[in-house]
Image (cartoon, rainbow, N blue to C red; front, side):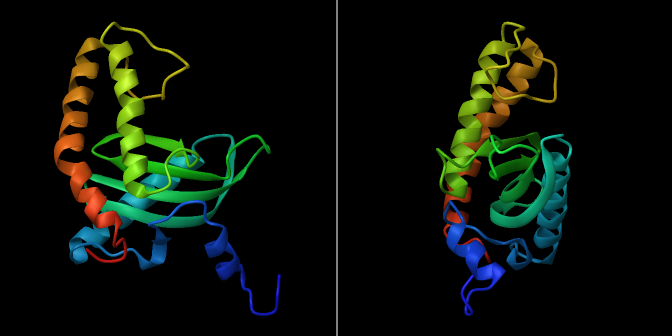
Length: 175
C-alpha cells in the first residue's frame, strides 16, 4: 500500500461494480425511509451471515432501495474457501432474500434484473411442485400457490419498482 493509499481508498478502487456507496452514506427520501433502509441493511447482513461459507462481512455498500419494498446491497465477505465469491449482491425486501454474484450484474439495477430472472426460474419449477439445486433457493415451499404469489410480486417489481430502482441507483446517496 502506498503512503497516500488507505484501506478505504484501496477498497474503493477495487469494487467490481458501479453505482454503490459505503453503507454509512446511505440516505433515503426522508428520515423514515433511511431508518427502513438501515433495517433492511441489517437484514441483508444477517442473511449473508447465516451461510456457513461466510466467515465475516468485510465491507458493506448500498446500491438502491425503497424502504420496506426492496433494497440492493453489495458486500465484500471473508469466504470460508477461495472458490467462494468475495463480492456479493444481496436483494432484500417484501420478497424472498437472495444473494447474487457480481460477474453478470455490475449495477444495482442489474442485480435486480438478475434477481427477477433467477426468481422467475424458481417460479416456473414451483408451478409444477418441483425444486432444483440448479435454481436460486427460496425460503418457501415450491408449490403452485407460492409460485403464483412470487410471480405476481415479480411482475410488480418488473413494471413498477425496477424503473424506480434504475433511477435511484444513478444517485444512491440521496433520492
